[in-house]
Image (cartoon, rainbow, N blue to C red; front, side, top):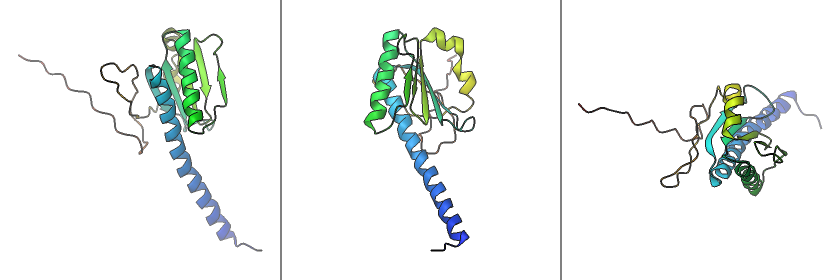
Length: 170
């Protein structure tokens, strides 16, 4: 059966738009699952960066710190479990043998879990960090080990709260 070219073009555009919308929703769910996995094991200084403008390989880089080899391994395990629990794929995990720097490749998002000394030395935020993403963290009462940087043009994420202004009394 002959299909007119305009029908094919319209069909292709519809598919592209559908994939884009679907992918944005998927990246939001994936990002949330990763952050939840990191928060469950008390990751420190969680930062999320939009990398879609830098590479076509992945859309997010998430960097977090763990205080020991045991914690970085547990963080990677928790991220894997959360992502798989939502039906996502974990392509690969690297560095678990040593545990100083563990990388979890979740396809559209790559998670770097480092100990603070290595994180400071390699400074991944400088490499990937020109577009931080706003995300909402779960707060667990008094202590919240995770903090996320803010700013991005993602419309689905919650806006970050402005810090309270310090005033001095005279």
